[in-house]
Length: 143
Ligand code: DHK
Image 1 (tube, rainbow, N blue to C red):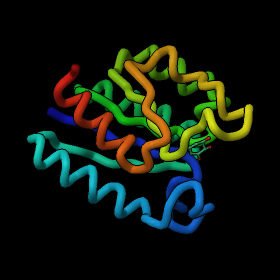
Image 2: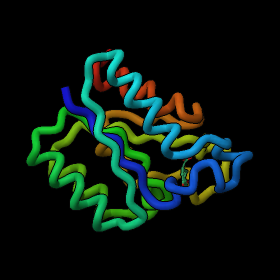
Image 3: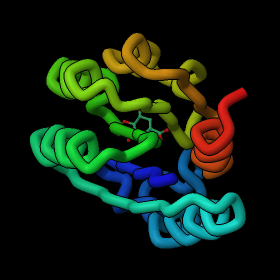
Image 4: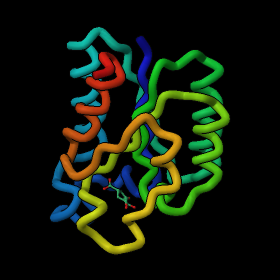
């Protein structure tokens, strides 16, 4: 089973950006945690981060062509703005779980809407890095 973890804009700044919201651990810490959980579950986990919308669209196309089994996607602010990413998820038919570190519903109004949620299998937010681990466990063994 092959699972991809895609992180969007500013998530390369985890550990540095707004630690009260995003915590003090880094993207490297997050990726190591998910890969370790993947090993435990017998899944191969590939991680990718980009600050660019088109690069995330290209990556989704690539993953679909490569036969990826599931995607954990934190599109960062593109969650709230990107019809291109929504169309890419719909166009590829990839099984995607939208995740967020923070509880977007407890934050500014503009974070309450997701353009992606309707074309994702589900949404997990507010659990810190555990949001990603819960998504991984679901994708490896759907409830
Ligand atoms: C990360 C971001 O960069 C924000 O733009 C989202 C999300 C929330 C997170 O909590 O992981 O609004």
